Structure formats: C-alpha cells, structure tokens
Length: 288
Image (cartoon, rainbow, N blue to C red; front, side):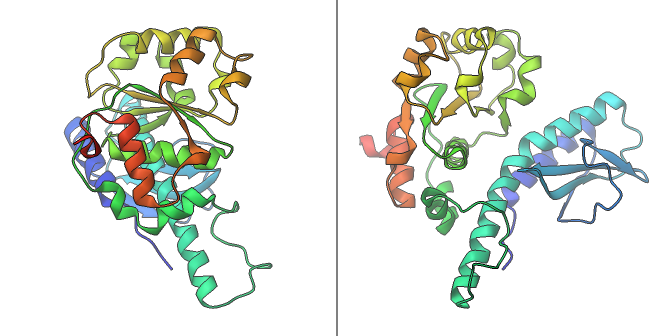
C-alpha cells in the first residue's frame, strides 16, 4: 500500500525556491540512483540539480531542480540546504506512515511476518503507531504561540522522541526541521540562532553538547523571542538526575521547566495532541 507525501511541505518549498532562486522543483520518490555517489549531498544530471533525501541512511526520494546549470556554487549549496531542511522531516514522516501501512496490509492478509521484510527495519513504538493512525488530526486547529522556545523530551526511544518533536514542529507550523549538528558550525551567537527564522532545531542527545554549545543554547533562551524565531527541542533517554553528569546545572534547570516525559504520553492521537497543546502552547483551547 502506498501513502502520499504531505503536499503542504512540498508546495511551501516550491514557493521558497521560486522566490529565492527563480527555479522550479520536482519530487521523485524512490527513483533509480544507480551509479550515483550517495555520499554526495547533491549531483547533476544534464542541466538538472538532484538532491537525494536521506532518512536513517536510506534514500527515500530525490528533489530535482530543473535547469539549475546557471546557478552559482553558492546558489546550489543554498538550494541543497533548504531542500534538506524542509523535505527530510516530511519524508521521515512519510517513511513511518508507509511502513505502518504495509504492516496493516500484511496483517489483513494474515501473512506470517517472521520471514517478511517490512518497509523500514525497526518496529515502531506505540506512540508512532498511534500518530500514524490518523495523521490529519495533527494539522487541525489554529496556530498557537509557544510558552517557551526551548522544549525538552525525555523518553527511552529516540525514534519516539523524534516523532513527538516532529508533532510539535507541525503543531507550530514551522517551515523547517533541522538537526542541530547540521547547522551548529554556522551558529556563534544567540543572534545567529534567531535569524534562522521560524524553524525547529532538534538536538537528539542533549548530553552530547559540549560546554560552548550549552552556553549558546542558554544565551538564546535567556532572551525574549518572537514567534517567528527558532524553537529548540532537546531530547534524551536519560533522566534529569542522570544528565547532571553531562550538562551544566543551569542548562539542566532550564530544560526541567518544560520537560515532557514521552513514555507517559496519552495512548490516543487526540490525547497526545491535547497534552502537547496544554503543556507548551499559549491560549490553548483547553484553557478556556
């Protein structure tokens, strides 16, 4: 069974590329990449720029920018970074939904699963299953303002933590979801973070931050920020007490203020959405 990629992300990306670079965009899911050096972030075929979209080490699709041969190297790098920041989280969600859809079809057919290779290798945690059951619910309701630009997720499964981070990202209608490690070399001050705009910066393992990186995060959250400035989501499988050996006491105190225990999340999609809104959104309908 095939699921489709959320067109909202694709349409927004097309608009941004057209406005910034005067180019179009095509998305090709699971195209043939025979002979391509997959370690490259982008490559050319004829006049077109191709950008592989990688999730969990697998190529799930390719973004194609037609007639990109007249772009400078800086322009190509800019488009490549923009495409990856917007499309990789969208493709990751599609990846999980596709795997879930395949599992449902196999269960309907009553096929013995021991010798069947599913789309994707790891079994999805329960919250992932629940979110995938009814994904359209996640986009309902008005946009709301965050209570903080730093949210911490604590849960035993990195996959589940990331899925909840993506849900928060969707609830706040941010334009890109990017791992901190992908952009940290560009960030030297809180102003550098702020000017990235309304994106989500995801720190998968907060315990891996070095001291200057921790100070950078603290500097950013010490200031007042507009709604169109970055949301930072940190996560870990360690408790706050265990983190005391890895991060500063000040950062530990900060993340404890808006800490969400993923493993205690409600067991329904709507329940999870409502709890996230109640915890982290201003003017939530639940406050009325």
